[in-house]
Picture 1 (cartoon, rainbow, N blue to C red):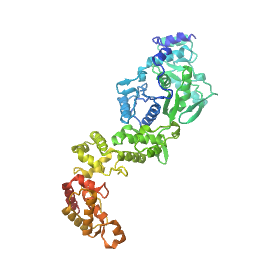
Picture 2: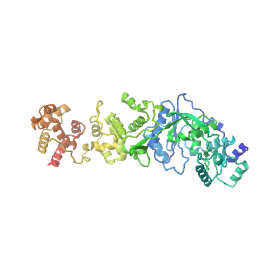
Picture 3: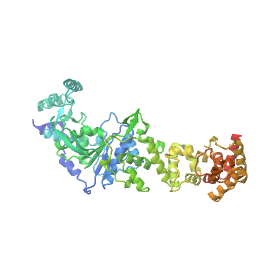
Length: 550
């Protein structure tokens, strides 16, 4: 077989060589320790939380080493591609603070000297490397129909041998040049297959960055590298793209572990050095006593957009994912309470092999801690930004008086023991509805241990004597006076020492005022609430509550 003649027959328009592309895409001028990673999704739907997880890990490994993080779009599966698929991926990554150095930095904007960064625009590059394989007798055209391939599968199932195009079932492997030329002249469709040199009795070893040493059977299947339309399969595109983009570390889902023998074989046949591999276990979810992968179909939280819709703070979600990635993140956060999450050094060898369990309670706790650490100004800005898109009424109320809303978000926001009312911006409405007359629903919690007669008497006295005190201590002393007047102990300690001598204590009286003003038995600091509401509104609330319980 004259393989160069065959290569010209199959690729008559390809005039560049791999050496040409090696010159176009030279080695990067970076420190030896710098890592080049990439996230290479297909635009087939929304960005999955597992995709964000993988992208975050890749971004961290690149940036903490002084390297580069690439966003490449693998759009060779046109049948499954969806409208706006690329923009959804980019928006999802950017909205969660994933810094893209190279590739698609926006829907229609590419940056970097190693593009194009969309596979459908790189057809000639793949065909050049495929042509080189044909010239060396390492790849060949296959004209087998779907019916023939189905027959092969049936025979292999009956014989209980490894499925795939190999051995005696590789019908087109040894076609002559004349047979190939005749088939092409007849207009027969064909794919290009790798002529695998693998052997059934050999195994390969590689070191996975997460799992350590892995041993697998060598690939013996003549896999397709170019489809009938000249577009590569994932396997071939990965090898060519990651080599030419000078990717040093490929970090991807563990469903690709079984494909590593194919990829290492392809790199070897092309005479290229493979990158280092690390395979991430999927995010899991408890289900009926067992565990399963978090699912696009079953779980709303599988979509990254769900976190934005719910209003989870971006850094809270990222810190939760870092917590899933490395158990040491919690120790880092305890020791570095105010440090940015980018200060944490991610270690792949400390990632789970079996899959981290998604825990919504843990996510909420982390996000509550994050929001509790924000200034009131920051809470106002982020809550208003969320409400502008998702809750028009709340947005109007928050922005009507910025000073008022900021003061509201400042309740109990002290650094030593901050209140943790909310873990996401969608909870603002419920947590602070009592601060807006338009949201105050006139429903009141029941007050235990205080009779209706005493409630009304306390409210009458309080309303008659109420003045805005200059500080919390003075206000609480005035409340003690009201308590004493109506037979309640001025101090909780006094009541506990002699409970039969009192109807209750000052805390019970405070609770009466709290329910009248907020409708709740639990709220942030009552003095701060009333000071922000203002005297007129406080008195109106007291009057309304008396009417409701009459």
